Amino acid sequence: MKLVNMKKMLAKAYKEKYAIPHININNLEWAKITLLTAEECKSPIIVAFSPKTIEYVGGYHVAAWLIKNLIWDLNISVPVALHLDHGNYDECLKAIEAGFSSIMYDGSCEEFKINCKNTKALSEIAKKNYVSLEVEIGKIGGCEDNKFVQGAISNLEEVKEISKLDICCLAIGINNFHGEYPKDWNGLDFELLKKINAAINLPLVLHGGSQIPEEQIIKSIGFGISKININTELQIVYANALKEYMEINNLDENRNYDPRKINKFAMQKMKEVLIEKFKVFNSINKAK
Image (cartoon, rainbow, N blue to C red; front, side, top):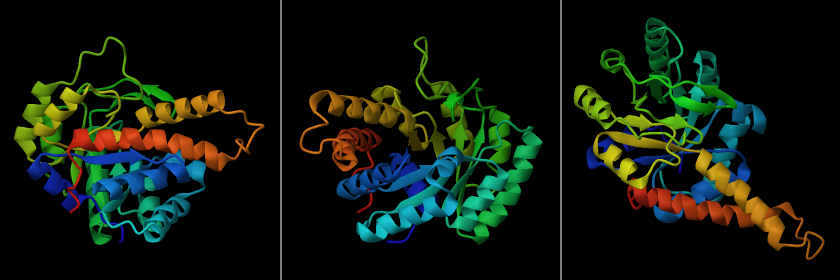
């Protein structure tokens, strides 16, 4: 199965009111368990790398070929999109050149005119390369690549204007956060979400999907959220699994120090969370 872009999978999800899981990949094990779980659940999947993670794993081509080769050798049959998460203009071009099937241009910190200008240019390049394009209006708050950023609620008029460009989906700010949510968080802004969905009729993206209560996730899908990004929650599960493994195993016995044993234990914990997310997103069996 070859990589696909997000256009058809998100259009179908938007129409049928479910969400495609977007899983940020942090290493080989992360990619492997994500693809295998998606295959087991027959769920379409978006595997994503941030620019910082691409630097960590060794480069854009390393990331691209890691996913392509896993799809081949693991006999993955469900639709898989390889996505660049929160890239600037140049990073998006690098991802396209390396063979990514989808990109997110994050121009939310730029002046709106610059955001639109770059979105239009990238849209033309992406279309020529059969690559899908996600853009953002309203900077998502929270911790992103070790930097705390203050969030911004999406401006409805800007949402309407940028949606006229040839984009696949739109990431919006509706009081959602990257990373762990503040203790005094008062939930998603569903009134704004309803207005945006009614105004543009385009698949919408919920960044910071970790730790949002299940009932709010389900409600948001009903109002146009078709792609939900998950990273922090899996990182926490992974870290806790490593801690648990160290506590219950003597590393001096039975080669318990073998990283393959350690990661196998952690990946099983991650799989349980992935399956639960797929259930909540209602994406199970949507690849059939």
